[in-house]
Amino acid sequence: MKDYYTYCYMDEYNKPYYIGQGKGNRIDGKHTNVVKPPKHRRVFLKQNLTKEESLIHERYMISVLGRKCNNTGILVNLQEGVITQDLNEYYKEHYHKQKEYYSIKNKEYREKNKEELKEYSRQYFQKNKEKKNRQQRERRRLRKLQNQDT
Image 1 (spheres, rainbow, N blue to C red):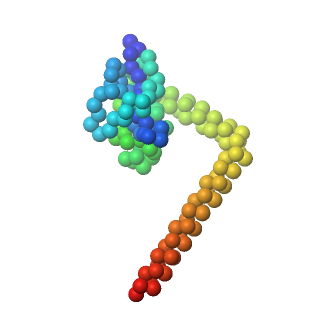
Image 2: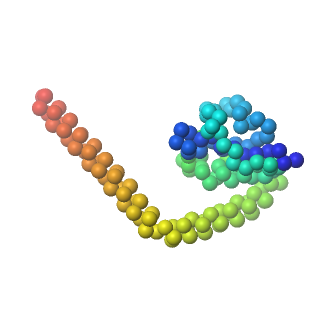
């Protein structure tokens, strides 16, 4: 039966911080190591899946977004996702196809939006440079005040 789904918990900035899979009301269920967000920040990623499909999709999403515990990404998931031995070969094939697809899509996107991305990067670094300069000026001012006090 296709009564499984994958879901995501979003933080206040709509950034995912936990990926899970289940059926029934698992999305609303208790989790041991995760703070459950308000209902409006609990998102269904895929529905009407078999158990195997939901396990594969959960593991795939965790691998794409990465986990904080091993310094590979943004999720608080402690495990890569559960997968049984008989699914392992199917998962490997599916994962590599998806990885190849997104690699091609990312390359196409970068080529298509090269100038826009370059301008965004320039603005980002300029903004951070200004912030860094303000911080340095503030540190110098504080040191100068401390030197005057002594």
